[in-house]
Image 1 (cartoon, rainbow, N blue to C red):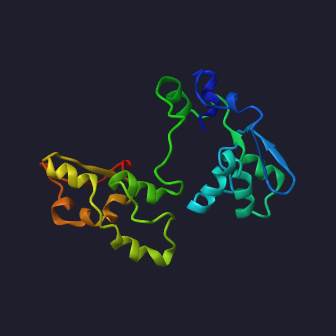
Image 2: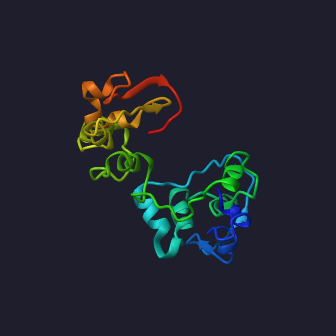
Length: 203
């Protein structure tokens, strides 16, 4: 996404620093970094915990092996896309922002895995042992199992006001503590809470 910005930020760990870096697909094919201008890629690299562990193994050399495991019928062109980057200024929002603001090139998620467990880490410091996205039949159990303290509890204890803005569903509402009556109120006082208007996601 932002690797080409190393021509703007000289010390950025980007494309130039990765010249010579390769991944092989486990079938005798080796892939180098290459620019791409596809706006949408049909075959999605997987990002569950086991997939990410394979991808980052041996110095980040398992991305193509993970991709092939998920998409065994992919062709050479599909696999190259998993090793490609967007040229400088190709992304009309991200690249101008990256030119003028901080790019965190050594940022690591709390959990090498998917979205929801990492959101639980962000809001509570733990995912309660959940490392993958829930399957369809697991959602009911997920909706009642996150009973840990939250950063909102800490804010409440200090009398600090807070608000959650969201687009379709606030992930924070899965947290049991957030389902308490006071935390569901919309009022803006020292303990208030969940903004029910449909706004852009922040949690």
